[in-house]
Amino acid sequence: MSNTIEQKDNLVFGKHIATLSLAIMGGMSISIGGCMFLAIDNKLIGSLFFTLGLFTICTRGFNLFTGRAGYLLDNPPSYVLYLAVIWIGNLLGAWLTAFLIGFTRNAAAFTEKAASICSTKLNDGAFSVFILAIFCNLLMYIAVDGFKKNSHEFGKYIGLFLCVAGFILAGFEHCVANMFYFAMGRAWSLHTIIWLLIMTAGNVVGALIIPVFEKLAKKEVV
Image (cartoon, rainbow, N blue to C red; front, side, top):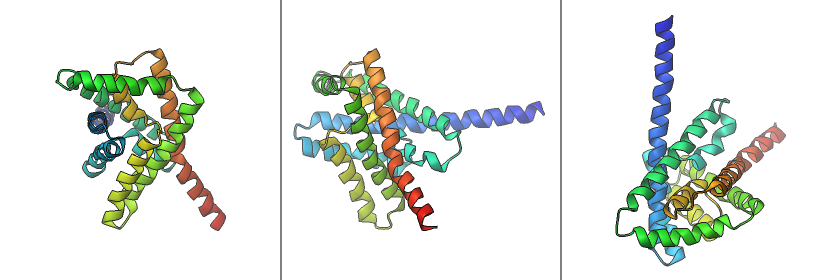
């Protein structure tokens, strides 16, 4: 009996490690997209190249909190723990990327630009940040779910680029991208953590808007 319990514990632990590993890669992928955005002065072009982060995640099967949050209602309560592990992994990946970039010739320029971005975000009001985060993940859900379900190859890829570029150009708040900017801009504080949690909550709400309305529509049809 004890051997069976131990085997189950080892299996659960192994699943969490796998989830965390793929989430770290997801955080690094988004952060590389963030590096591209910081390196390009033209905001429109920078927003398009930022999309390579989500493109990598979708094509390689990495874990991204904002992409997985939209499927919360389709899974058992334990999915909340799964999302928490992904969030932590994304944070580790973002921090690791920023930490390593700090040893390169790009460090000074990236830090300066990231600090400016962080200042704008952290000086905003909590409700504003929350609303902007909702709209961000409304777009992210369209991008990720469209990639999974769109039968047209061109459509699924153009959806990624349009939705990601759209949330950046509109100034919406993406919690994982901001993990990287906060780390790169050396802007961590208690205030930063609180704002990041507010962004995370907004992202969850935004990710669930379409699934909730679709479920309501199906009930109405039935």
